[in-house]
Amino acid sequence: MKQIQNSKYLELLSVLGIGGAHPGGINLTKEIFKHEPINDSCHVLDVGCGTGQTAAYLTQTFGAKVTALDINPTMLEKAKYRMKSNELHVEFIEGSIENTSLLDSHFDFIITESVLSFVNKPKALSEIYRLLKDGGRFIAIEQTMNERLAPADELEIMQFYGFDSLLMESDWEALLIQAGFENIQIQNHTTIESEPDFHYSNEIDPELYNVMKKHIEIMLNYQGIISYRIYACTK
Ligand SMILES: C[S@@+](CC[C@H](N)C(=O)[O-])C[C@H]1O[C@@H](n2cnc3c(N)ncnc32)[C@H](O)[C@@H]1O
Image (cartoon, rainbow, N blue to C red):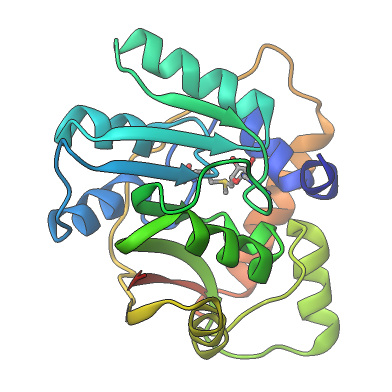
């Protein structure tokens, strides 16, 4: 549970139960999957599934078999509630993508939507590579810097979010190549937005409102610099 304790921001997301907690939200996810060969014979792993908005969409729309993994029990509880309310079947696993007990070459698709920034990236990427079938697709929507900042500013951002590094597009590409991925395609879709989707916890520590304030402050201060990319590749 180290990652959760290190990130007050992730704690905030889980108590607010924010669905689509990645840039572009569910509308970007829908746009991406319009162009992927997904159908009811596919098994998808949604890594860091949060409250399960994407997992629900993939199973409901394509009939895909979805396994959803998250390290945070509050997120998983909210994701399970979403599936129950919508009568959807998704398999849930509580654990870290840095080290799972899932079988080798098990999934046709693996997705991470704003997850890898919070974990040990080489470890998580080699685990994702291991879990993917040959020819399987890995799609990641991940925070990406458009330019480097002064070291003190980068440190402030990393400490606030609980990131171990701030990567530029070329850094992500190098990590994907190092993990063994091929046919890497990188896209930048900054115009897609989604409606917010909240599943609040009964009790919210007032200190977390300061975390929200700080997050908004960072986003405003570094507009156009802290960005994201969609990375799509094949094993
Ligand atoms: C920014 S949220 C994104 C949630 C979801 N993908 C979405 O788009 O709404 C990051 C998620 O990654 C999860 N997470 C963080 N570290 C993780 C790890 N080591 N293994 C699995 N999930 C992790 C968090 O608990 C959280 O649900």
